[in-house]
Length: 203
Length: 203
DNA sequence: GCATGATATATCAGGGTGATAGATTGTCAA
DNA sequence: TTGACAATCTATCACCCTGATATATCATGC
Image 1 (spheres, chains in turn orange, green, cyan, blue):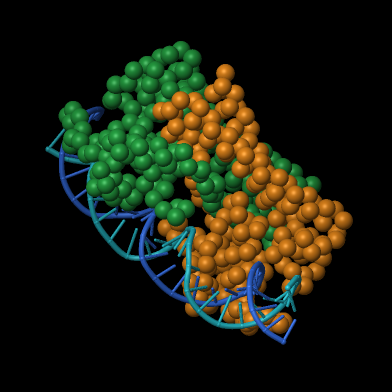
Image 2 (image 1 turned 120 degrees about the horizontal axis):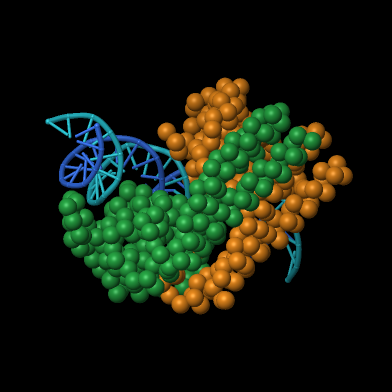
């Protein structure tokens, strides 16, 4: 039962965050949640259909302001109830699949130079990601401090059209920022590991 | 092409580490690699069959010292070549699926108390894992320092039967320890995040 | 002798994956 | 204005991967 329909609940939960389309969900996960979650179309659309079938969400005609028709999904009270139950359950441990670390581990048979090359590659990639995260965090932090939400903030929330009151915005900003902090600290830890390993392997 | 046969190469690489059975592979991954990789039987056995079919590994009758027959797989030169090529390719970024963080994120709609409960749950679990990792790291560190490899070390290497020379043992210990350090630093970062978030949400 | 647990192989339904097709609309420059 | 291009949005597919479980053998201890 552990992994069954985990994405099911994830998508349901994202609808509880705000009503949105399948495309919005994909974007939101890509932009703001990518450091700890992922979803793809092949899963999103069938799941949304399933949610509607089970009465956990309803399909609405989205704001067609000039654009093509959007299917916006809104969570129902029944869906909200089911999601809240799931939220109260203990969660499984994080699942990590780190190909770079696997390569490092399996490079032990070769000379140190090969292992070092892998670590350096790791370092470069994580450095880029770190700067990206820090930039986003700075934008969010500034928005929360000043209480102003410019375009670039709303893009991080993937919410450039729907009106929200200030309190909602501040709350959303806060939780995106807090989870982003998790991503930043994870990346910093990886970079510290790179430093440590390079020292061990070159001494 | 990104994710195709990633496990394929992982298993091939584990055979390059040392010849072993499907059961050994499962154990090795569970014991020593679980913080950054996972494999399961449903994937291991078909993959091993495939490797043999493609001439990348050979199936040998394992040491049946009292036990039931073991199918031990040994990488071929062709397999080694293919694996080394893969090792030299740049790796994809780490994939993380953190259900706890997802729940935290989606609990923003509720009072702080709900979010705090999730973080506390996270903290407890990671604390247990950290102590476990630190225990293993201490054992490995002692073995490398002293050059002695007691039973408990060989269990961490999942190698309690096959004879290896001292140099090989030391090398294996070193790389298990180095990757374990990655796990430790990742868990420490998560715990630091818990601290930070609890402070923010209670102030 | 018998319960229990470790060792070991194998299989399966179905969940999850990336890639991509296809349709529609905004934009911007030539 | 027209055409190229990017962005928006829905949808589907083959295949990989997952967890759970069935089956069998052997060691151990009581």
